[in-house]
Image 1 (cartoon, rainbow, N blue to C red):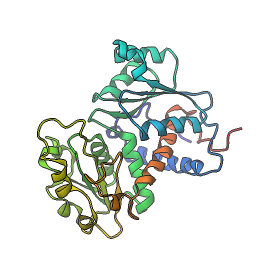
Image 2: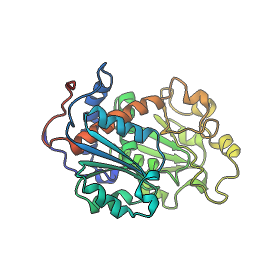
Image 3: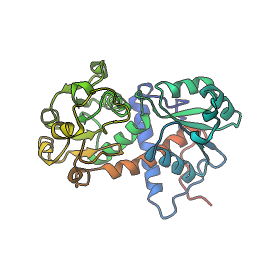
Image 4: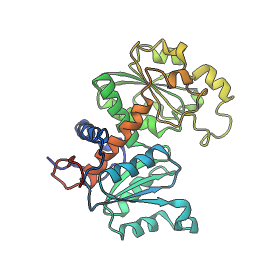
Amino acid sequence: MEAFSKRSLLDIEGLTRIDVERILDTSEAFLEVSRRPVRKVPTLRGKTVINLFYEASTRTRTSFELAGKRLSADVINMSVSASSVKKGETLQDTCRTLEAMHPDVIVIRHNASGAAEYVASKIGCSVINAGDGMHAHPTQALLDAFTIRRERGTLDNLVVTIVGDIAHSRVARSNAHLLKLFGCEVRVVAPRTLLPVAVDSLGVRVFDRPAEALEGADVVMVLRIQRERLEGALLPSLREYARTYGIGPEVLRHAKADAIIMHPGPMNRGVEIESVVADGERSVVLDQVEAGLAVRMALLYLFAGEKGEGPAVSEAD
């Protein structure tokens, strides 16, 4: 198999359509592994993966840890709260310290935009961005694309509506960049105070009301209201937001009858999405979680595996 052309995964904008298809096709093989009775393979035996998370995370951190272990890699989870970071150590010094341990991949989540790119510029191993500030979350966009492709049969020329806190969402940005590679029409809908200043630069259609934005949509992607990032009077109240922008059965009727409902989690039930929708038959929220493990296994293989070899998916000894 031809070696993957990239050294690190920092942003969707650094990928081509061919790169994305390569990642998604590789993920299919690892999804099959995850559904076996014995879910461990020897693909990354002898490799080391360090998970360096400066922000709280459940799905992303757990899936990267499980992905590495199922590939038989040595996985180290750095607890920032118990590390030298709390003693004032800089990100640069932390990275130099970790590089001295000769890891093959560092997976980093940081609250500062550009942190992953900074780390990649300072060390020699592969870096995977697990979310940096409000900038990018490429692995989430890839698992979303994987889920959409499996559910809809294609990624080409779909209508995808993203609803919620667009201004603070690295998920929205990464998804917009990825979906445009496949000719999708990406729509965003949110209160004007929750739209980024340069929203037009994302190449999306902007709507004021969910009913219009959902008209004929193939995919409805609901985003969490990021209360921890909100400053000032960006919203009158969560109750008012839920009444106008919350996704429930009534507004969902404007989307296609077979539209799928997505949410990256965690959900604020009763705020951005009603439970009857989140848990309904059109919801693929749990499919996204399963896809996250498969996609992150594929990424660790592509960035840490032996170059030029196909994924070893036979069971471990």
